[in-house]
Image 1 (spheres, rainbow, N blue to C red):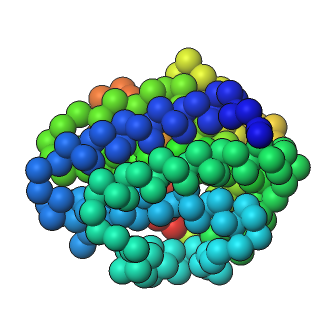
Image 2 (tube, rainbow, N blue to C red):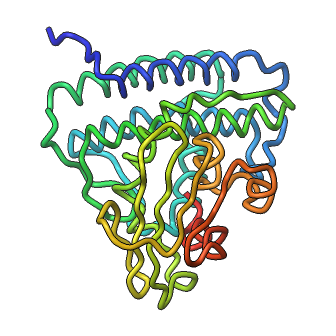
Length: 263
């Protein structure tokens, strides 16, 4: 029998999944609407996230389905919710826990070279996809907490893990209308964490390559993550100092997230 992975990203996934489940199961009325994901309710959001570890596991095993284009993801998610096997939050929570453990075991079994197809017909590394799954737990936990008027702390150490997963799929998430002809290099420093480099060349994106920055951005990790996922207000983040842009073309900073389709 395989020993459970102790890799930090796996431990982060378990931690955030547990926090997400605890939040959802504390809800008195699951029919409360979630403004960040209209027309979904809390029950819908939880159902969507509860099914994701199983979907990731199946994709890692060469099974399952995914939307062939990024723009089709909202309809794909709506169908996923409409097809939930159960609607009881407690039962869904049990499925989420078991399927997450199964996916982590699958990552261990397949090893770091394994790849799988993912949303937007993109081939990605299975182990790094765990970061994207952590993003589902964090961001949708934030959505539910906001709908309830509660706080939802985000551990800054988890943010680079999520971005590692996101970087695999971001080139396929470009909004080609918004990015058409755009050429600029963004250096994003997460405070207390690593540098992220995003280079657009005539609307095409590469990540991680060095180059002279057109704009440098210093960002609070939790704020930056929410902006990447289309939550939060760039102007408010700038006014409160949570995101600071400088360099040759600082005015480009607020438009970076807008060059992507909503994740």
